[in-house]
Image (tube, rainbow, N blue to C red):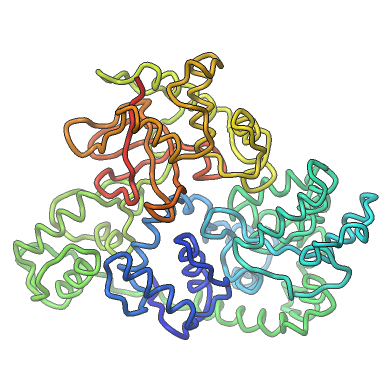
Amino acid sequence: MKLLKINSHGDAVELLQELLNEYGHQLPINGVFDHTTDEAVRSFQKQQGLVSDGIVYTKTWTKLINGVPIDMGTMEEKYLKESDILNLANVLGIEVAVIKAVNEVESRGRGFNADGNPKILFEGHVFWSELAKRGINPATHTWGNTDILYKKWTKAHYKGGPAEYDRLDKAINLIPNNSNVTAAAYASASWGLFQLMGYHYETLGYDSVVEFVGDMQLSEGKQLEAFGRFLQKKQLVGYLKNKQWAEFAKRYNGADYAINQYDSKLREAYHRHLAADNQLAPTTARTLIKKGNAGGLVHELQAILNELDYVVPDTGVFDAATDRAVKDFQSSHLDKHHQPLTVDGVVGPLTWWALENPRPRVTEGVIAYDEVPPPVHGESQLGRAALRVAISELKAGAGEVGGNNKGPWVRKYMEPAGLPDGYPWCAAFVSWCFLQAVDGDRREMPFNYSAGARDIFNQLKSKGWSFSGEGDKQPKPGDIVCWWRTSLASSNGHIGIVYHCKDGFLYTIEGNKAANVAGFSYVKTRMDKLLGFARVS
């Protein structure tokens, strides 16, 4: 975790700003730790009971990441791997450092925003020409749309980060329910790690721009594959192989590449990555420590434990208190392989890694969510029927198609609530599963069909069906779980269906947490923002 403070710059600051905005702030996503960002950090720290000093390090990062409704752990499945870059470099016959340089300059090494959507930049001048290509006169639609529709390139209307999706959504709805406008909008944005324009979809081998966008949403690996095809189709491999940065930038970024110094940035990034890749790996690593040891490593361990709220005296001696704190940490955290740590009080490689990368929640895919869990005494039969429906949707690949909160699956869930797609759909998904469980008869549902997570939970709570899950009554398959989002007082929330609860872990099936209906797992004692559970009668 990178330490950030006032005047820090870069991608880590951009991620920080995105996360702070999830908590209700309205920061520009500019990668600059300015006074506005500093004020937001201090406000967040104060709300979380942390020292309000404006310094973002382990404790603040942990609170930021663990509190957002998006499971940040699932993002690791989307991240680019070193082996992906090495494979493409071998296929194209170019250096790894060259691909890393383009990656850094085009997207600062991140293909996704913190909310799980691909990084995009919407270009209004391209939208103008894409509409015209499809027989739509853009000049007749400029009123009220000058931020998304204009003849000449300008960066004046860029919002950056997730806010670019507001511009994309506005473009899609320029003429509602018009497939040509939707296609033109998708074609007018640059996508992912390498900011490939949507209008290149045919060159990249896709049948439609929607298919291209779908791939960009899957992973940075897919984004890299598309980049490799683009280099080959546009005959750009030679320029990269020979480090002809200006010639490459002219063809990749356009004739005005020099305004943004793309060639200079590429050259500098290449030499930096080349030097880093040629560095020798450290010859020493942290050694194993346990109860009875003393010294600098123990001081370091105790400092990290205190940062993570496992309070121990910083004595440099691995005493009984430190041993208890280590075991407590191990009992509720996972290693780099997504597996629970061994609770033995011994700080070896896996525990050291977990201390530096606290992962109190399990990523998806740990258990077979496509199989119905075994029955549990006292569970709700109606809840289990709804769970079976949810599993069927998961197996069918239900989820977003063609954009954030978009597509036929989302429309199916939202329609009974009287809403179109384009809205958060976690609650509508839960409602739909229970509607199918009663054979489509809304009169038999245990709650009114709703697209509001907290509305559903409040309905169940008013019937006396809610519980905290802290005492003898524990969640069972088919129960409902609900979280608050921006604040306890707001109406925003998130909701899912319990798949199973075992050995201190809660397993769920949820919609709208990822782009698809998916299974998620949590360390039950560390579920931030939990409102509670409910079991339908």
